[in-house]
Length: 405
Image (cartoon, rainbow, N blue to C red; front, side, top):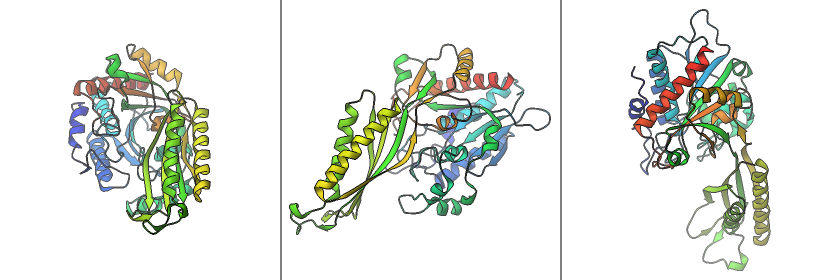
């Protein structure tokens, strides 16, 4: 037990490698299953009590001495799934660092006065079923179980079908208020998804807030036809409308300081080079610290899309897939962490996290570890070994403070 998260990360570096670059570790995939087995093996090796709850969340418990009582437990951890072509730090760094922090605490001779759980949340990225932080959203009741069971992946397979084949019971998913009531705090360590720490020349930061963000699907329905035989004036081309959606999003976002708008997914049906499309699906990701600005941007883009659809003889519908308001992490918990880490700066983040979902129910906080490239959701994301070690030490110190108070 070395407490070395770098060694742990090296062990999983070959799991879920994407031939196109980076990693592909979607929920319920063989790669994600192998990562979960890796985590369980390491947790058991450390004598932790492992369980999987109704929502597929893994919990590895280090219990306080005396009669078993997990009320007031402290939780740390992150996720193991990835976006397509993602890096090896987004998610796994938090899980590996949590395991390593347990080693550090034991090496320090810490005897916890309350239980500690290392948690692994499934489908944090939402890369398979389109809803980010799905495990924590189910747990907190932020998303309806019936809606989740009906979600479909890119192959048209439902969450219920895929999860059942993976050995989970889709009928059991849903809110878990009893478990939530037993948790006193959640501290998630994550690689920084930006250059804040690199610019400040600091290895570790405390999280300030998660800016508001949401995901929407724009579906434009037109009329399929022959690319050569159909005159331009006779077309009902949904690609033309979808292109206006992309243009309108970029233009509107650039009008709002610090807003971010992205189209990272664009599906054309039937997808033939010489076929005018019948349907186009476009997914929007919009973020800003002020959630009203996010809503206003989406409303304006929706209006522009509908106007373009009318002009082209198409029909456009916009569906919200998920929305997370701005999350200000618990100030008392952050103050306690600042006592332990007085030199750590405070940084906001534009990325969503399970800690943000849990923040409406329990005190939550985050630690960020320096990423010199500032790149994320790409193989270019990185964290130097010395910074990973600094993150583990920082997390262990924070957990020690929380476990002994």
